[in-house]
Picture 1 (tube, rainbow, N blue to C red):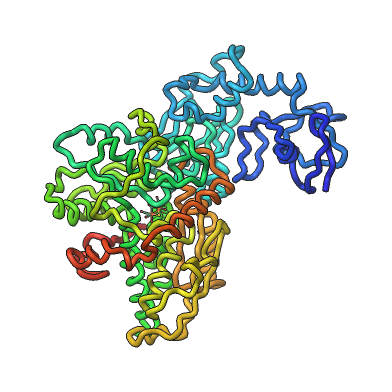
Picture 2: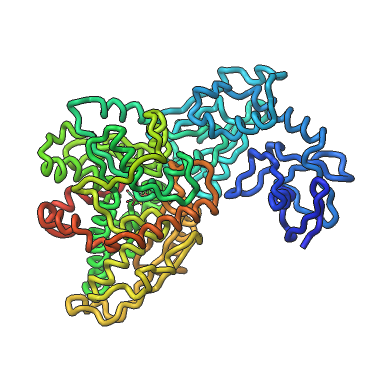
Length: 589
Ligand code: HC1
């Protein structure tokens, strides 16, 4: 351990820790901007500077490791003046229309400026207005350079967490800016729309493209029947925007709020997550039969999940030769959209032309996915408008709903019942676990052999997880699977996906089935979830998802009564002609 003192208080921390981390242990707050727990240290904003006894210059606490006997002052006059000037300089080149900014109240620059009581402006017009540009052509993300403080958190996120590199630093000195390849708009570069840049941006320089006004317009149009679906991870994120602790599930209050907002029907993406398991599980078994029995060389293994649109865009750009490995299943969001304007419309006797299908997602890439040209199998745009968890919170606040006072209400029917298996889609490993709960039981007639149906090897925040499931004592029609050890891998975050794909590509690893989610932690850590986020928050959200799964009466997709009903009334069976038309898709290079 290393012993030092901060503001005269003794503290011991492990070797390798930084001054910032040591201060945190003493509950001494040092403001930061370029620093983020998810990211490598950059030390470029200098807001976290502190005074070190015996050292002339101030040192960046985020980038300076502790030393034995160090004496640190985080609050000297020199430190306070320096910080104040840094913030004043940032504000001098910052668009200060805070009340009109989406991040108003959630902006880290605004918070620090308020904490330091910066009330006047000594530096003016450091950068001319025409230097700034707003890129709003992407269906998912808006980039507003007038609010960028050039901390490069977005750049490190895109390169290091996501292995994408759609944004980078361009130019030098006062002209330095965060840009794309040849400054093309985000929708024309390799951006996957994942929105991780948004959740790591400290200001309003990167935000989701908002569709809140269009949703209000639809709700107030008497001709329209507005149906809303809510993704698994929204219910464990929304509360954070509305005054609840991270890890609080607000499912039934959320349903109640959506009804008060005026949606005609409040339904659950968990239902189509269950449907995905039926379709994707059957697809996997069909592929395994093709490979193991028919020896068909055209069967692509491992089969990869396809419900994360950021991952789909990534594989389309980066590993196009593996596109046959993607499950042909649409994501639950898009399955829901296709069914909303067919099965659901018919069931409630409403002209599908008058249905507006809205989804609430923890993900910005879902906005992009809904706008993919092929997503019109219902004969209409399957999902009309996608809001993030944060945008739903905005609507709830706009409507003056006192969220914590709401009654708990249940989803409408049909397409409103989801199983615990559908719910756990929201956590990394959840799709795999849900699939195994069903596939194992279909093949063997027995429950998957894990206590409480909790398949622990696929859970948690590790970058790459593996699970090998031995299939024994199968039912006669599945004899080709007797004794097969099903090899599975799960990963979250696109850099981890990149590592996994490389290990498959160079022959180091073989799997039958892989689950890949674009965002750290899976959808619960999506680009549309509340600020801030780090592993501790992701862990709490994950625990909330698994706790809710345990509490549900149905925890396997194939036991969802509405799933039985839709196959009886409409789809007939998994991979039927109708299923193929509405629920499956193909991909582009
Ligand atoms: Fe997800 Fe999915 S789990 S992709 O993470 O398969 O966004 O929550 O809705 O579609 O169900 C997101 C979450 C979500 C889909 C489902």
